[in-house]
Length: 257
Image (cartoon, rainbow, N blue to C red):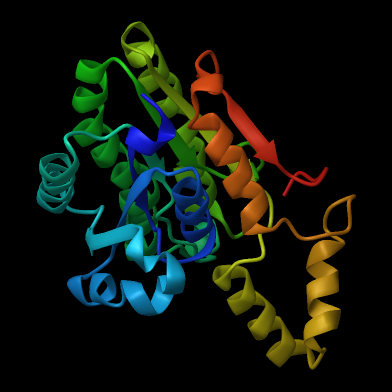
């Protein structure tokens, strides 16, 4: 089987790292189906993907719902005959201090970042095991190994991905199914831009000044690009990565966050 015979699911595939990974997998000839949060988002796929829309399909997917996950995966299997690659890139991020942490913010992080990934793996893994080939890639974060004030829910949910991934890698090992995580530091995505915009408003600094402050948070003094994450994901999804499993690959530009 070559990459041109394979099918990938990418959650969170209409923005940020998920979108970059989807496009990179398509460049190898992989058929890609991205999960969109609603039917309306799925209908906008041509607007979001542009020229790539002819090669990337989209369907509604709510990773917080088991029924939605199971229906989505069943549709992909029916259309493509199976699922070979799963990239779990859907996620949420909101800051809150532990002492006054809203319950709904905590629940949203755990249910999306961690439990949503669990639901996707549970639905997809049996198909991979039967095919005796599969690649599962979870987008975690350097926050999985390093705490940060006012980020309890995010850090906890991403740390949970590492433990989940180790279990999945052990259960899939005899069936040709690998499971790894990618843990980036700040990546120049739409989510980071929201924080930059908020800092610009609060400080009166320019875009270039705030962006430079984020870049200085790591020794390389640069922001990681989504394309860099996508290149690593493409390799980890390939035949060449057969023996790479149970690992967390950090794209951290030398930083702890």
